[in-house]
Image 1 (cartoon, rainbow, N blue to C red):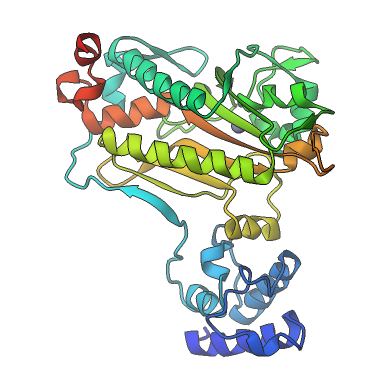
Image 2 (cartoon, rainbow, N blue to C red):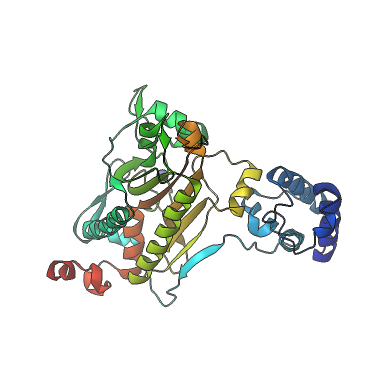
Length: 374
Ligand SMILES: [Zn+2]
């Protein structure tokens, strides 16, 4: 195996000679941020991966094709010369509560969340109160940033899912309704919204809506069945307009979620994620998503060993849905979109695992007795 210094030297020669134009070669140093300074574009990433695989005699797994490992020659040498752990994922928020003892989520089922035949959870008592509190909070944020509340159908046209790219990307996750050729069960809330804007022109601060709905995906986790439900409740806030408008909405909500996490005293991180739900994951594209992260995830800890589950995602779709549904901005370019999605069953699970089911042990602001009294 190549030492870190050897790999760094070989990479430096390769990048200077084969990847950048000769005019730029002198600008490339081991610490130069190759992608951020736009010395190397997404097409060249594939060459870089191929080069690394040849000189290190090993296949680079997709999970390691992330910006943290490719940002500079130095970073590449560090990541691929040894079996060192990669610096990925990148955290942008952390609220660490290390002294906590966790309750096994399986024990919580009796306390207000009952598993249903369709692979979802029925909510009662404190579990229901918690969801009502959390959803009320997010619905209020949505109003504050100008979102209109919508109620969508319980089914979705297959034509819409096809146009959105969902069926091509995740055919195995689609849940059909018997042999209905026209409608299926919705895998996410925001797919309902784009058809309304199809073939229209939107303003810069075009459209922002919010909705709560039941979503269904053919997914299972036999080891942790409660953590990956087939049927679950999702609140989404969806923005369509200019790229800046979408990023503004996303950044605003990341900040609000961070404050809520602190107020609820939850052990959590918000970090970059690599599984964009609507694209085919070509490696070059995957890496470019790390340059400008398109998906952040809120992860809540559920057990003593630090295992966590994704409870919210902050997605920038760029012009994926703008193109798919022919939604344009005034200047003629395709509209950008983004959505922020909250999975309430996962919040309950993590909240109960961290704070227990006894409301007397919860942070005071969300105890029902407090809510009623105030
Ligand atoms: Zn969405």
